[in-house]
Length: 459
View 1: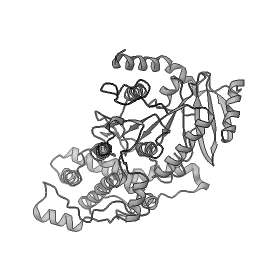
View 2: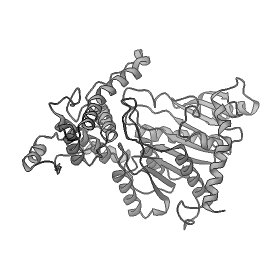
View 3: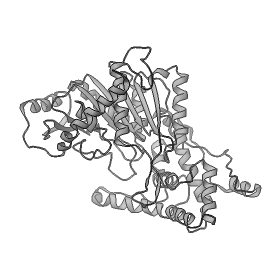
View 4: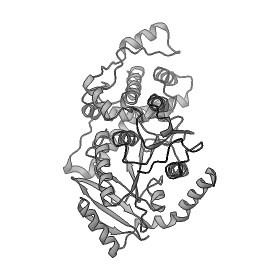
């Protein structure tokens, strides 16, 4: 069977059972004897506060805690004794998106990262993190704990999928625990390290502050690039209003950027377009609403958490020379004299290296998919550095990188105007990558090429 035939067959299987999985959002009330046995097996495997609920397709959801951290699993009625775990991406500080997880991973799964493997017999799920914001260490530790539990529970092979920050967690897990996962899929991920990624965001904020200073387009709040611009206040007593408060703060940060691009579109030869031209040239960003909006809002709201989590600054622009072809010599001098500078803390850099800078040394089959233009995680930073680390480690046989076309979408919830999407993938693209990963692990067929020189992974 050719690779194309295997892909078509895998996708056909996914589509043929998709309607069954859609029923999993509704549950019956009584567990079968086999499902009750799974709850008891989970308790014996070390889970606490275990509950189970049947799904209408014959499967069940399993919820509980491991050392106080919640987990959520969906187990199909014909479980193949394999598991797929998902590593969540970044959530704004103050929110509880990664601290409180869904009871049913199949519900609201727009991309199919749970539904597709579940439809093929895999148990799927995730672990809660200990914090919002930057959560690489807790993501690695808690996902590893969940995988250890699944092994005791009866899983014989595990796969891992992670997106955005979850891509860094994925890369960290396969390096720290080389025997845990047979295959891994990183999507739009910070697959190399954080100093370059955070540095790109800080550069954009610093350049934006400089070129919009004193205009109607300047950002609100604290202008210092080593501080959050606005409060991320939250309180357990007002948990129900936290999402609204966070959204209001994010909209405040987004509003002047949206206004700047609207003015530039209305007058392409005006001062607003010149601001955009200079900011893009000085930072290497695309002249695109999404390429400004997403990085600047993320770092302007999350900087306090970033500094606290890493223990200081992990980016240093004290010696960086900023330039733009639209500036005169005097203007370039003024830019480099007056733009804000930030100095890296060696202790923070050491923590960022531990959690997590790619070494390129892993045994797991890793597919990394990314958009050729990503506004938040530039592939020229992350993918290029990962490829070098893997090559320098002599580990090219375990990495496949796949560039996908960029996607432009309305920049909701801030505006209907379009810009580049972070993680701009379709469900079909995710399904194809998953099928490729399975065939690489199970049939030793490397995507885009012939069989690997070595033997297939079989953890």
